[in-house]
Length: 170
Image (cartoon, rainbow, N blue to C red; front, side):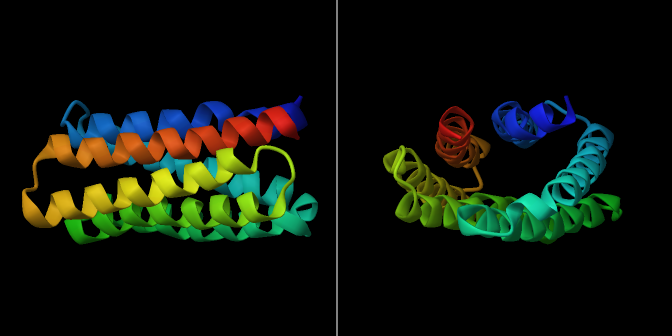
């Protein structure tokens, strides 16, 4: 059962994480809720990485092991930012932008190295980068939460497409 959760869980967790990020950007969630979510994500990432480590030694899974490690560091950075009073917006921004871009690298790499559904991975990478561009531009130009949310949504769709392909094909 634990193996099945590791193999299929990300297909739920990836869109859930982006939905949660969108809700946080729209101020629908209390700061404490976002902190608790980060702590849960820290624990899930550690558990997933430890339990999957030996299976992720070769091929595209090795690249995803690196994505997990960098992602854990990014999430811990976000947790640290949320523990500050007031929250450290620069750390939170780096966390979000990192999570927009790091999986994009994994998706692009996967798209170049698999036979099944390479377009899902490559397209997912493109959408992740596009989402990051929209998010960063929205931060610099207007700070409008709807622009930021649009960037998160675009990247979320791309990353979800990649994980759906992975769960379906492997």
